[in-house]
Image (cartoon, rainbow, N blue to C red; front, side, top):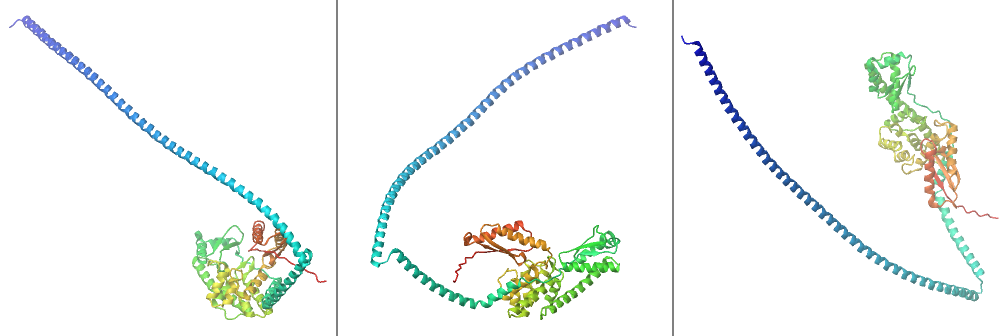
Length: 521
């Protein structure tokens, strides 16, 4: 058995040797690492220094290149500015040269004008001398002529005046003879115009009618039945009739609104039937409106036939008779258009009888003159032109068609019947009382028209005639020249438009005349 102490000693020695070896190995390794780290640090330092120098050189090169670039840009700008300055200097020099030339030209013109002025002054002096010479020669010649003729200047003038008076009387006599012959030729036409103007002062009573669009209800509960569930009844009624049905807070009444008076009347009659019957639903509404429309067609024909029979007119187209019936539901300023047409027809007939013309043609033209008002909402144009086209399409003659389209002077009147229609239309419609207008308002308007005209300088008298549809103005010929009358009429018309409220149109007529009066003693 070995000695334990020896074994322990060997172990200790072995451990010490191993520890020494390990220590030496680690020390060598540490020395190597330090050496390597030092070498790496030196290399990094060298690389950093080299890189810094390279970066410095690069930065210097870039800065130098930028400096050269900016220098080139500045050089270009300097050169551009120099070119602009040279161009402006060139223009300035050219302008200076042009101004010098103009100054030279002005100097030459001034010298030329001075020379011409001098020449003109010399000529004026020369003419003045010749004028004095001619005047002295003229006086001398007059004296010699008076001596030769044995007449003084006053005696010669008196003889010349007498000769001129004799010549003027002869010319006046010839003109008077021609005037009398022309008056004889135009006597019939002139008398007809004078008579028509005189009859315009006639006035007859007339009751105006207005189409009412309000339907009375037995109670306010009926409004709910008219509206229907979710408004289906009122929608059906408006769609079938083409009329707006307005239901508001008005007690026991509803309002019908439509631009077509016939459709409005059909809707009114239909609604009254529905209210009376009590059955109000979409099917019944359409049935009643359809039936009422057919009844209205028959009613229009009956009304038109009654108007034709009342005016004793024959052979009128059925289409025109139906249109005449529509006029019964049309009003103009509160006046029923059909009654106005019948009245105009009779007035036309009376005028034609006084003038020995065809009364039936005159009544026919008067009855049909406002035909276009029944359908003027369906066509473009004025009611006169629309009515004339309608009459032409339905076989009316040229006299009737022209009287219709000329009754508002939109076309030229080709016969006396057109003038009669204008007169009868004015008598029936323009006089006070025929249309809805208070007499006091009417008189105030006429007074205002004459006041506006009389306030203009040069106006002698003014008259508001034809119920205020025409203003005739007489001016002083010594103050207002002939060429000033159109401007005066236009200015007065513009003043009336600004200051006066009136229906329709007002015709402004300016009259300028010179009268020569001689007294026989």
